[in-house]
Image: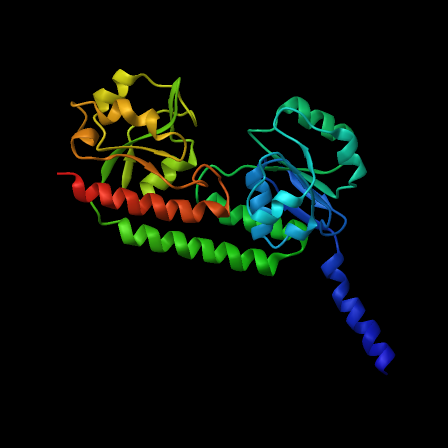
Length: 288
């Protein structure tokens, strides 16, 4: 009797190891014979999301700069956005390779495709994409309960921030990501989405590029209430701090914020979004 019950339990558990099919961000259906327990991630944000999905222990290879969470630093690096170690990738025997849809060069993806290893395209451009990606990765790896719980927690945290800042006066923001050449964020960049959530208005939200190059005169003409950058060299903002015609300079709203993951489109962005909201609120109080 006990033996028959054990066999029945095994039979009932079998679907957990059955084939999995997940639609990726390129609209392709990726089907695996079983949940992926050997995964290669070719972007830092993908690696971070895999950990949030409960699949961190299944990641056998990553790309350079996969630094979040800390455990990702110990995983072998198999390449970056421009170069892949195909021999090492094959040696790691991955069940699936997750590539960055807009960041992994097509030529590199073609080389991977020739290896016959399933490829999953991932792309997160808005904050709302992050919990969806977390859930899908959980489906791929068979870790859906953990993935869904963390995705729900992320959604709740974002909703809380949105409610906190929804009724506040909006301030216009120039967000500098580089100074030579002068680069900012367009509406395709997740930082622009985060600014909106925090009650800020990206002055270059009308530009479709993720990281457009702009002119100094264009910034001055749009008269932002706030000029900010995340991390990096604060000296790069000196010219703005001394621009007498700029509302941000007159009100003391030229600032460097400590938000190291703000450009990382994955779950680890959340603490930096909180910091962004807090700093914008401080600037809001200084803005007439």
